Image: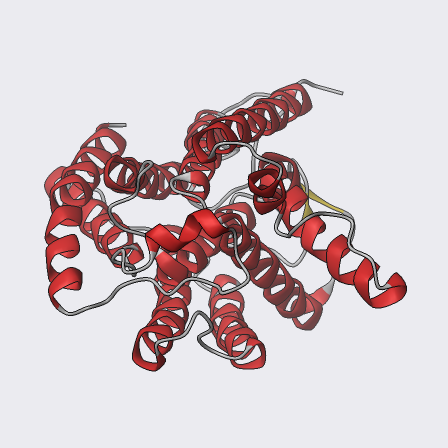
Length: 351
């Protein structure tokens, strides 16, 4: 437990002190955000705000994780390292997207096909490695079963599992990416889901089948390290959010949103709560569905359901203040997290 607190503290300090350094460096280099021409008029004032702040979240998370383990002497786990790899790999895809936007001076970076290809490559590497590195109880970081509160059903096999991971990674990282667009919205919502995974990982560690004699227990490879990873990324988001809160002095860009989506997908896979993530991240699911509905409706009928998609921009055009939308969406995210944790806890009781 000391490792959780120490790692999170280091990550928080690095993010809190490192973000203003990044703001100065990115500002001097002219790494300012480009704004969509068809976006809300109020966003014009955000043009030129430093972006790619997700690099700070990634670096703070890695430093916090490694320093915490180094000081306490606890060895890093395969599960923890794989989730951090997924975060970093997707962060690099997002960095390429952000850099193209800045270099070409436009609001669009990588083409959608290239971005999905990058996400798929990182997802495949993660999926293949996650089925290796068994511990002394022959548990690997991931399993080929689908999971909700734990694994269920028959094994889907390694090939379908890789496809499933690609879908999860793409859906989650793009969901966080679509939610990013208002100051602090995606960062705050992600922080709430990460807090849930700190609780889930800690609870699974207490009820680990290799340690507990309870009738209900969890076959998870590295539950405590799962909680540590969630804690360091959550702390990094806290430190970044100090500077990203309205009015934001820096944006995390696709570097941050894809990385954070990757962390959530990775945590769900290694903690055997893949389908539960759809509930814990309910806000991301709603915002993603708003885009699907908007595009589908326009293609089928030529009419739009919302004033603008993603959903947060609909409320902007309806006259809601940006801070009002952010706080209310945080509340919605919090309610989904509370519901998801409630379902997780109830599912632990003996049937």
